[in-house]
Each structure stands twice: as C-alpha cells, then as structure tokens.
Image (cartoon, rainbow over all chains, first blue to last red; front, side):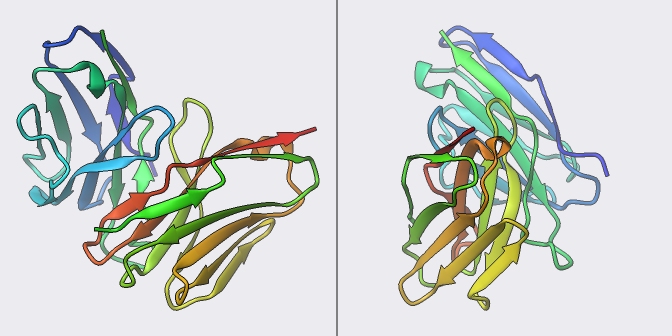
Length: 116
Length: 111
C-alpha cells in the first residue's frame, strides 16, 4: 500500500510569513495526526482528526496554527504568522481504527520548516 | 496528561554487543507502548510494540519488556549491527488515547 504523503518536503520562510503543509494519509485510514518535531526531541502531537472531526487539539497554538481535514481524507496545516521557534519538522501520521494493527501510526516523510 | 521519560539520551556500543534503552511513563491507564526508529532525515518507523496485557515481546534481535507495576518499559537490541545506528523513540498511549513520545536515544554502533 502507498504510504503517507506530505508536501512540500522543505520550506524556508521569514518570520511573520505564512506557510501551509499538505498531507495525504494511507487510503482508508480514518485517523490523521499532525506532529511537530523540534531538533533533538520526540514528536509532539499538535492535532488529531477522526474522519473530518477534531479529536484533540489541546497542544495546537491556535493563535497562529490551524488545520483542517474537509472531506475526511487530505489535511492541511497552516501557520500564520510564523515565528522563529516554529522551525521544526512537521510530521503527518495516520492510523486505522479497525483491526489488530489499529494502534499503529504510520508516519509521512515530514516537512522541514526553517523560519529565518 | 501522560509524561514519558527516556534514558539514556545517547548510547554507544560495539558491534555485536547488546543495547538497552529504558522508558518510564506516568499514566497508569496507558495500554500501548510502541518503539520507533528514526534515521537521520527520515520518518519514524515502528520497530516493535507491546500492549499492556503482555509482559514481553520479541522479534528476532529486538525485544521489549513491560513492567506495569513500576510503569516502565525497555527496548533490548542484541547482536547490534552498524545499521542499527539511529535515534530510537519510545511512546505511550495514555487514557486520552494520545501517543506521548520520549525525547529519544541516539544509538551509535561502532564497527
């Protein structure tokens, strides 16, 4: 099966600019996650979708970050305006709620964001 | 919420030796504990996981043990090879169904 797709792979922007990331999960996976991974740290969950509804966004800085998953498939994560501390790799992951492997999350390649 | 501590932050071993990475968690309701391997510039990949109704799981050279009473779990890699060199992350799925990751262990296997 095809894996989780993300684009772009790299992005460099200046502070106060806006940026958007795109994720296409594995076909049939109802649950989609966005993580922020700062250099030298583990991934931190920003937001979790179940189909097109938000399950958890408690760690999403809502004053500048937004995410949507309109048709329950693709998702976009936006940052506006960006700050220097947003420099990180943004990982998208998906999982299926059914079956024995229902807990396993499959990660995409990530988008490396550099804010200058 | 869940808090996961991972040790050591770096680990260097000789090829053929064993490597052990340890994690502790805070939420006693956590029921799923995956381990991910992340090579430089690549995505995290699941290498092994364990659920709370099992104390140990093994897959070839990799094993994971879980002590629910003490709230800690460990990754064991035997007969290490240079291609095992990577950052390893533990994680715990807590009562809020979220995965919380440790800060990672940089494993270096010296030939």
